[in-house]
Length: 150
Image (cartoon, rainbow, N blue to C red; front, side):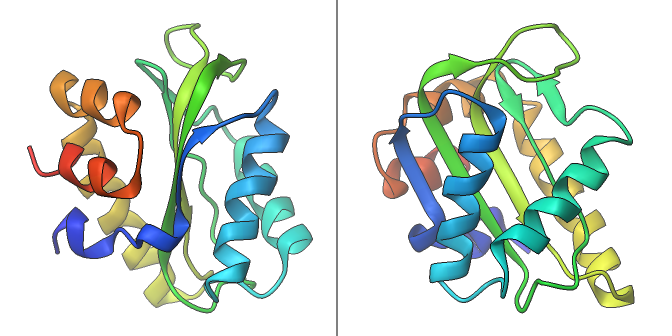
């Protein structure tokens, strides 16, 4: 499984204007709904916040990977947002966030397996500072995909 085969340009939003975590999650979740990945915005967001209560999803270096297994997911997907400005987010390094990678996975056994695969795949890529730099400078979905090719 390659990241570039997982990224759907329909659920990538660059140059995002957002003031808060809630604003970002609403925008990205709307993309997921419009593209047919989820069936309900409010239910899906509720599941994300349930996961957020277990521990922070801001991994540092201006990146957050919010996620949560949800019955409202029809198809596994990854929504990616690149913000114009840093916003507050609970992170390991105490900095805010500019890049958000939101996983949409089901809450069944298959969803749990996909969830772990996606986390592992993205964690490896996001361990590379060059990938993060290119991601945060991306101006469109093509540039986001190129950032993950490193």
